[in-house]
Structure formats: structure tokens, C-alpha cells
Image (tube, rainbow, N blue to C red; front, side, top):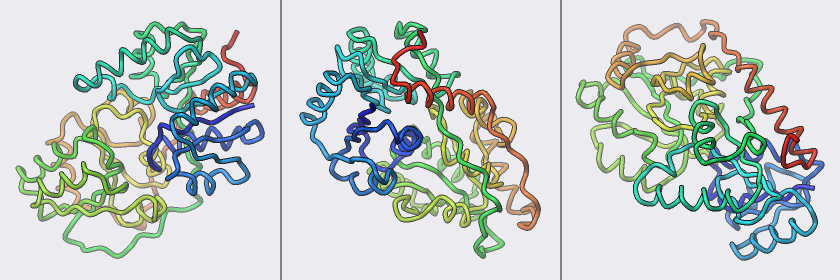
Length: 337
């Protein structure tokens, strides 16, 4: 049986939906799912029929201990292994938390120590960034597992588009959790190039200190928020002309995958993770100035909205790896051996 440990997920972000996909496809094996109190309603809606249990950190540790005594798998879809507990799966999504500042170095030391004290399964969601990181931590091949995000299904048709002004381009931004999104670099270039009158930005995410700081710092940028808890991705896609990401250390990019499958154009920087999952399909740029220049050019050359969408197919390796990870999780095994 599986105990889903979502305690370390603080809101309905990409980590939450990653976990939901894996747990939903393992529903028959789930004993219970542990969440913070503020996520109980969202978890119950996303995982109907599952036993959703709110808990504190003490409660989570107690439930983890019980799972070990029963022989259950403690499925923790974040990078928080409990030391000396081998009956657990953890997931490394990106290297950003472990490479930024003093806290990052401390987190890396704690992660290395926790992994060394157990024989837990260590999953990584991409092969271009997180796999080398996991290997460098000393995790043996028998404990490693490529467990990428689940690609959403292709919609039957493109989202209906809302009427917009012909003199501006509405740029979609996804995620508002932290400065790894690098929106400050994007906005600085927009202001430097004189593009603030042509470009309007709509972010999809949550009200966060990072978003508040951006709005205060870049008052010359037209930036609005569509709250992801209140609007489906399809509604967001219908209100933007394209999606943009200038992030340096993304682990995947679930909204980008959904956008490409919906026929929505995506402008991305040349980053190994993006190329691993979204090439061919997205438009790639070597620098933020080159990307902003292309955004400004869209205002004069916007394609007809009735034109057929371009083609994008998820990489077969990622699709197969997801199926393999689900099969292994449902089998209740910690290793391939």
C-alpha cells in the first residue's frame, strides 16, 4: 500500500499537480494522503475517494513511522527524505533549492545526509539537470528512477480566444512562487527596449511576496494576475497570445506542456530542460533581449487566430518513463532489483 506524503507542499503549485497525477494513477494502492490543513479541500477534489488526512509535522512523522511498521511505501513527491527510513520514495524536481545562497548549501548537506542514512528510492524528473545532481549526491543506479511529469492529453480543439486589442500583445507568464522565474530580467529588458506600451503581462499563479515585489519594482510594466486556484489553464490560455518563460532552473514546466498541446505558441530561453521536453515545438532564444525583440515583432505580424495550430508531440522517452514509474510504484517496490 501507499501513503502519500504531501506535507511539504504548501499550495496548489506544480509540485501539487505532479503528486496528484502519480497518486491518481495509483489510486487502488493508496491507504491515505497526508497534507497540510490548507490543502485538504483541494486534495479531496483532486483525489476523490482517497482518505485525505490533515497533519502537523509531528503527525506526518508518526504516520511515516506507522507506514514503515506496516511495510507501506511512503511516497513523498518532494525532496524531503526522512533519515533512516528506507520504505520511501522522494522526488528531486530541480536543483534551485540546493544551489542558492547559504540555505541552499545547508539543504544540500541535509539531503545528502538523509539519503546516506536510508535506502530510499530517489526519483528525478528530468535527465538534463536533476539526474546529474542525483548522481553527484552518490545515489546508486539501483535507487535512481526517472519519474517525469505526466503530459496532459491533447485537447480536441484549441481554447476559444477572447477579443483583445490589436495594438498590444498579451504575454502569459506561468508561476509566481520565487525569483527563479527571472521575471525581473524580462521586465528590465522590456523597459530598456521601450516595449512596455506594446506588451501586457498576465501571470498565472498565486498572490506571493515575489509577485508583490515585482509589481512595486516595475510600475512601468502592465502586470496582472489570474489566480490558478480560481481559473483553469484553458481559461488562462484563452486570454493570452503566447506563453513566455525565462527561468534558468525549471524542472519541467507543466503549463508549457499544456500550452503546446493546446496549440499555443511558447517562447523559451535555450535551457537544457526545456529542450529535453519541448523541442521541437517551442520557439527558443539565446538571450532575453532576443526573446523580447521577437515579442515586439509579434505586434506587427500577429498570425491569424483561425490558423491551424502547429504540431507538438511529447517525447516518447518521457511518456514511457512515466508509465514505468507508475508500474513500479504500484508494485510497492523500492528498487528495480
